[in-house]
Length: 633
Image (cartoon, rainbow, N blue to C red; front, side):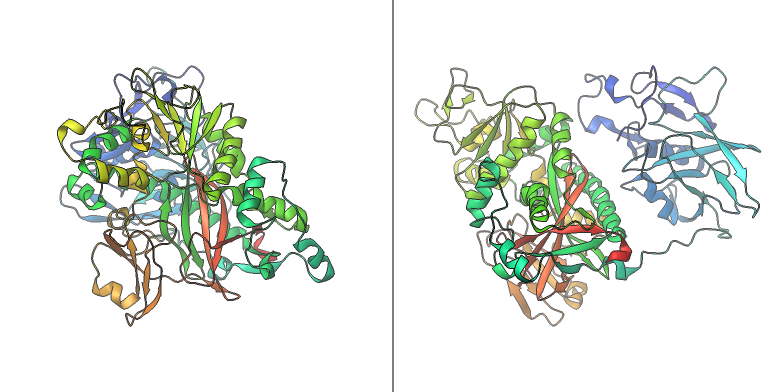
């Protein structure tokens, strides 16, 4: 995340100045990164004495490094800078002792002090992540701080701080620090201290505000006329494909539900937004953890022949994910994550286009559409993707894949990217240098696929062994005899694929136990283990295949270990994980799941999936979702 740009920034990594203890403050101008010096994603990880500090040269990295070098302790790894405000201890490196940490709201009777961490909320100049700086001096009317990833200019000679912020004291004795950057809100400051006087007591949101409210958009004769009208555009390829899939202009499969939708309040909306942003970064941290530990990677049932390629994909910083969907249960007991489908386009079109068309048709104007920003965010993500040539969209003849692909094509073209649809592999051909080309002889260099990576993996498991001579993969067959295969495109080193190969780790449910071990106190994570434990038996549990899709091969057990729901499918031969049972809310006889979308790594929108069964499946409906003020729930 890059914060406000600087005029005449210093090159990335340049030392701008030094704070107390001689701690260097570095430029974070990513536009000037030397790719020879920092060729991989791993090269951007900062370590001191083997202790991970953070990403070079982000604000959190400096805060943790300053603490380590000057105080000998660090705070836990966090997903967002604003999360520091909720931490309650730091860990001393020498003996592992936990020292108390207290947070003081901006305006508190306890002023900031040297060594305190100044914390900004998300929003404005610090959109999505928030910000953290180290307080170095407190004067009568101002506070001096050191920080990274804001102003990347060299400090004047003799200066020992990044910025000065105005400090005032109110009539009630409270101290307030203000930030001049647009929309920047300082939450307060965090101090390692045993004195909790004036410290913040952080209250959770009112749980009743997390309830989804079922609604009907039209009633009576008007509803009857509206229900069977055509409200999608049959002349638009994506909308026409969606209509073929659904049998007309409709979201629900049951006629009785065609006009039904849900409302969600602003408090719950902010919570699922925050959960999405935090969890995306947590999943990336966990992915890195797995790729640094072969024993963990072994659990993912990925052929070892592919491991070097996955490392290569992860190390390539250009190889970023475009879109993924988190699946949540949102109830009065909180927001809990089931899984992250980062290798799936499912529900994108329903959320980003169809539900808005539905609202226009039924005259549903309350609040706003939960997918209002999704399409434009997709366009922006593709603009930032680095695609510099024709992109090929690979798909089969499946109706669902067709409308997914056509919808994504609209975002690609809006981003100025030329793209071509390739159905199956029948029309593919080799050129003289071993490249796979489309039917017109165009080399396939950039790919977005509807196929899951598991489809390619199944082909590898069937056709390839772990012999070292087969590491080239796309060179392992006689091209004069055999036509191109999926793997000959997706696994060619020179081909850039979205979603990238490393998402095999991120989307694999074997990552969930790793995630829980790394973030045991996250309020969004359910207990998930590789083995069935007594704790899981006591809570009830769900058994999931580590690479299952579309809700297949899932079994749900209650606290008495009675089976209360299961699905069949193609993944019954895969390893499994065991996840704490946290039931979906049941509203009007339907189980309701919230799906949120991370586009380009940040929250973009949401949808609802509903089913009479406790297990959401591929055929489960997507109902419209409207976001309203809490008082209108």
